[in-house]
Structure formats: C-alpha cells, structure tokens
Image (cartoon, rainbow, N blue to C red; front, side, top):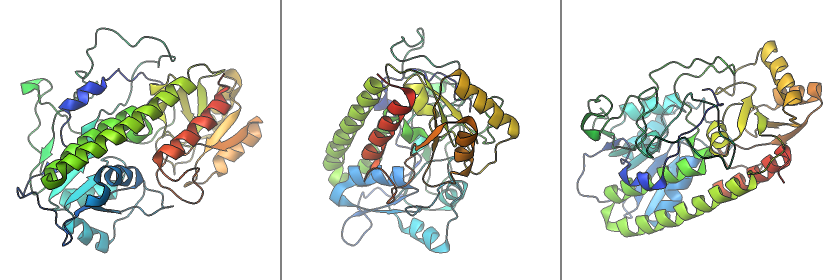
Length: 370
C-alpha cells in the first residue's frame, strides 16, 4: 500500500447501506447458543473484541483468538481454538490481517461469520493526501466509489452460506450489489518497501472506518440475537458517538502542525494518516517482521531531514531495535505509537479510545502541533 494516498470522502450516512458482513444464516431462531442465553462471540483480536463487548454488553460472552501481548499478524490457531470457533454463535474477524484466522473461519461452520472488511472500505493505492482543512475531491458521490481494484465502498452486503461459501460475485455496478474479492491484486510496494499482498487491513486505526464497522456489527448481532436487538442498537449508537468524538479530537488536534510526516515501525497508520492529511513513512511496510534494506534506512534519514521529522515511532508488541537504531543514527528521538492490536500493562490506556487518545498526544508532540 502506498500510504501517500487520498482516501475518498465517505459520508457516515452511507453506513446505512452497509451489509452485515460475511454472514452465515443457517439458523433462523435467533436464540443465543449459550445455556445462560448469552450470545457466544469469537473475536479474532482486540479491536474486534472491543467492538463486540461494547455493543453486546451483558448479553454476550466474548472470547478472543489473540491473547493480550501476542502479536496478531503471525497468530497460529490451536485445535482448542478451532473447536471453540465451531461452537460460537458469531465469529468476528478482519480478513487479510491474520492468514491463519482467515483459513480457520473459511473452514468453520459457525452459525454467523462477520468479516469486518465488508462493513467499510479498504484502500490500497491512490493520489497524494490532502492537508487538513482542504476540500475533498469533487465529482465523486459519497458512498458510491469503487476503487481501482474493484472494492465497492458503498457497503453492500456480502454473505456466506452456512458452509462459508460466498455468493457469486457480480461485476461492479450489477444490481447495485457489487463486492469484489478481497486481496486479489498483488501489492506493488514501489515507494515504501512493502511486502504485503492485498489492501491494508488496519481499518480500526481510522475512527471513522471503525465506526462504520461498529454499525455493521451491531446489525449483525441484532440479526443473530433478535431478542436483544434493541439493546444492541442502543449500545451501537453510544459507541459510534464516542468514536465520532474521538475523530473530532484527532481532526482538531492535527489541523495545524509543523510537519505532516511521521515515521513508524510498520505501516499500520496509513488510514489514520490519510484521514487527517498526514504522511506515514514506515521502516518495514505492512509486514512488521520484515527487515528494511539499507537503501530504505538511508531514504528515511533523508526524509527526516527534509521534512523536519524529529521522532521515530515504535510499537509495544514488536521489536523496537530497528526504530531505535534509525533514530540513533539520524539523531532523532523515539516514542510509542500504539497500533492498538492488544491491551497490555505497557499500553497507555485501558481500552481502544484511551490508547488512541494517547496516540494523538504523541503525534501532536512529534508533528509540532500548535
């Protein structure tokens, strides 16, 4: 993914058209599967867990495949976890982030499967990002954009049957229900040394997209457990309001900065950067475990000097060695920018919103916000 791109404006109102994810409708009773009447939800990792818990409240029991402190990208699924997935009423995952999870979900016969990527839009490449306050591109109706790889951004439903097989895909525009296959096109990686195939899956780091996922999940949970649909709707509205407020804080906090460039360990913050008119330069691309070339390190040193960057950000769940080496060689300081892939005792907050607020503080300092 070329993080120097513009994400087209997507009106929040368009989320009313969002599908319910990759849903399997093999049960119409709507009864929760647990003996206590709770909806059993299996979440792939923390950002999905957080949504399910906030929306479900006391009506759900949420378990996660990725334990706190575990780096999610290279997760391996145990036999116990596979068995638990089969018994779940709803499996919530984010296709393209964890290959082992994608495979396990595809093979699973869980009652309802929700792929978070079908509830919002994903981006891969695009033009230069706008700076905060500049008008978005005209001539592109909100909610009707299809990117160059065929990913419809109007949020139409994408369903799977009870055996996990998706509906036959239709060409863009046919019957207004297009949904291209995710991850078909290989990633070019020409600017930033990326080695990841398919669209960037880090949608949760953009509060606007994350709110879209929350809305779609709320509908899916209401469908899976109609007895508590009213509560799920109320909880979804409250969560979206908090995420909207978070978006406003980022928008206001990053409107006037000394520089709009920041350096990170891996390209987790592309959507956030594009949302607020910034540029993310990453050391390793979308794969946090890859090793940067000498040319990439040299290019980052030049970028830091040209764009007045004084900070290299590292993460809590991956090695900080390369980031600190780059910072030392270039005379820069280091700080944490948390991709919120899990909450641990090293996290600067107890939940998604608190950690994101800490990220905003770190970004404001690094970018010289006024």
